[in-house]
Image (tube, rainbow, N blue to C red):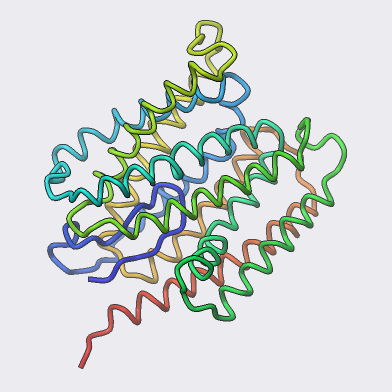
Length: 331
């Protein structure tokens, strides 16, 4: 059974052998709705990070997210998986690394970065995640480079540079947008490590199990980091309803419900459909940056984001073609 390389937050492993016992694919309306809704919810994480970061200390907010997400994921993992019964000792090392890089590193860098830059810039940079993941696979794992991967990387760099250089004074009222953009770029590097490390998990560990275990580990580490570095660790009494609503949605929906919906659809959908659904995430992130953050639309946004999005389309075709090659019957 082929694995899908899904370069977005929360996509640890799709199509594990333990998750596809029937071996059949489906393009039913329910499957399509699960994929599109899951990706749209993942996209909301970028603007929500900015709202949460303005109401909570970074590591306290990160702990709350992991705790809430774990509570949402627990019943799904408990009733629908083997509860890590088939995990090997090597899997636990991988899950620990995924937790450290993909949960702790990503979440902290994202929160610090989104405090300083705009939602539009953050959404544009996050759209480059597939291209960065492909580049990291070439650099560190000896994967083959082709014109789609190279083109996606080039377009991503050009689009991100353009949207930062063309930023108008007063956009998003950010204190240091370039530093913030750099931190978000670091976050997607952590996410690339997350995706590549997840490929080392054995077939006996399901996506939900690995996500839950990594979230619990990250939550414990965030407690230590909050006590050590937050100026007012776990002081949450004065947070208003907007902050609480944002952190609850950030944890329960983007960290808990979105993976459940995505995995449920991805384990049954054909490769081309799964790859194509990835385009929803950056569109959701960009649109919600205007709606939730009240950022003003500028044509430079459309140009910069468009360049990165074209690179994403190239990566979607790359993933779809690879999936079709891997699932072709051998004769």
